[in-house]
Image (cartoon, rainbow, N blue to C red):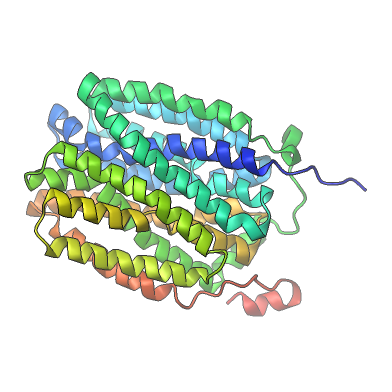
Length: 408
C-alpha cells in the first residue's frame, strides 16, 4: 500500500499564491486607467474598449472552466506558467492593437485566458488540496486579500507608469513584469501530480458536473456570483471615466481604485475568517445587500473627492469579500477533488455578469451620455443577490444511494 505524498506547506502555498494573485489581479484592476488614453489615441468611442474588456471577462470565464479541469487533473503548475506567457503576450498586444478587432483579441481573448490560469479558481483548487478543511476558508481569505493588495499596490504603479512612460510603454513594462508568475508557479508544483500523474478520484468529471448542476444551492451560488461580476467590473472599468465626466481629476480616480484595493484586503480577510465561524450564505447575503445600499447612498450625495473616497473604502470592504465564502462553500458541499473545475463554473457565471456590466456601461453611456441606468441596475441586482443566497444549503452533499434524491 502506497501512502499519498505530503501536501505543500501552508507557508509556501500562501506566499507564492499571494504573489501570483498580486501580479495577476493587481495588473487587471488598473485596466480602467487605459480606457480614455487608448480611446482618445485610436479615435474610438468608449464602447470599443468596454467591449474588449467584456470579451476579456467572458474569455476568463470560459477558459477558467478548462483551466480548472487541467489543474485538477495535472496540477496547477502547468496552468499557471501557460497563463503567465499568455498574459505577457496579451499586454504587449494591447499596446500595439490598432483596430477594435485586435484590441478584443489581445485585451479580450488573450488576457482573459491568461487570467483563467493565474487567478482564483486555480489558486483556490491548490489551497483546497493542500490545506485542511478547518483552515480552508481562512486561507482563501488570505489569498483573496493578496489579490486586493495587488490592486492597492499595482493601480498607483500603473498610473505612475502611464504618466511617466505613456500608455503604450506602460503596457510593455507590465508584460515583462507578469512573467514573474512562472518561477513562482514552479514553487507550487504538487508532489501528487509528479510526472503528470493524477491522484485517484471516486468521481469522473461528468459525474461531478451532473451532481453540481442538479444541486439547487450550486445554482444559487452561480446566480449570486453573476451579480458580483456585474457590479465590480462595471465600477472597476468605468469609475475613472465617470469621475472625470463629473470634473474630478485623474488622481482622484487613481486613489479611488487604490482605496478599493486597500480596504478589500481587510474585507476579504474578514470574510474568510468569518466563514470559519458563521454561515457563509448569510455572509454572502449581507455583502450583496450592503453593496446595493452603498451604491444608492453614493448616488444620492453630492459627488466630491471626499464622497468618492468614502464610497471606495466602503465598496472595498465588500469588493472581493464574496470570493472566500463562495469558493469555501463549493468545497464544503462537493469536496476538493474537482474544486478548481467547479469553482471555474461558478466563476463563469461571475464573468457573464462582468461582461454585461462592463459592456452595458460603455453601450449605454455612448447612447445616453450617462452611466445612471447601469448604476441603478447594479443596485437592483445587489438586492436580488442578497435574497437568493439565503436558501443555500452548505452541508456536504450526500453521496451514494441517497445522492439522487438530495441533488435536486
